[in-house]
Picture 1 (spheres, helix red, strand yellow):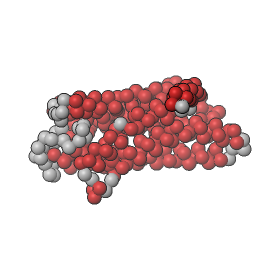
Picture 2 (cartoon, one colour):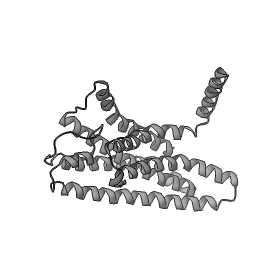
Picture 3 (spheres, helix red, strand yellow):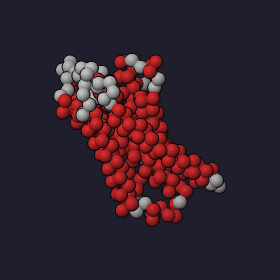
Picture 4 (cartoon, helix red, strand yellow):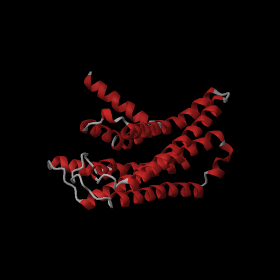
Length: 257
């Protein structure tokens, strides 16, 4: 099924995202240090940009998958055959790779004039830009503007897809059909909302509320929370998992009583 194929890719990207930042941060906390090598920092920027961009591209593709499934169900097998799904997934990974290569090459070609201490628990592009010489980051600034346009382009595509989906669902005569259609969309909508809201708050928050502690909390929100929550959100649609959780919580309640 195309949806499960895309979910496999999403799971791999989530695993990669959280593995890029968290193990090093935990090791540094354990050894009470904040040290990271120059090559390690470059690798962190590259892999995080790659996986994060690919995940957003994949979530955009998954909105198209839901649109076809609900608005054009008779054409689902034709429009989302195995070759089409593989091509779209490859495009998502390729987009992330290109985005990461451009940003990493540009960022690490900038001269640093403000020291070499990144004020974050992982190497993040905005934090490295703060260390660069004034006027030297115009090329990277141009890339960031281009990335913002791509971000909002994908966001507009997701919104248009869901407008069409909701219009189709609301026209359904069967209440059971409406419920089934909404239940197939809600996990994806929840994952997209979590991903976009944390990213937008992290990068578009006003400077007046910016501080090292707030930046740290926000960074944890958008780097750790979505990868952890995505499997939980999608697992809630699985009947076997829901029954197992009910039994588990039932046993815990009985033990406390």
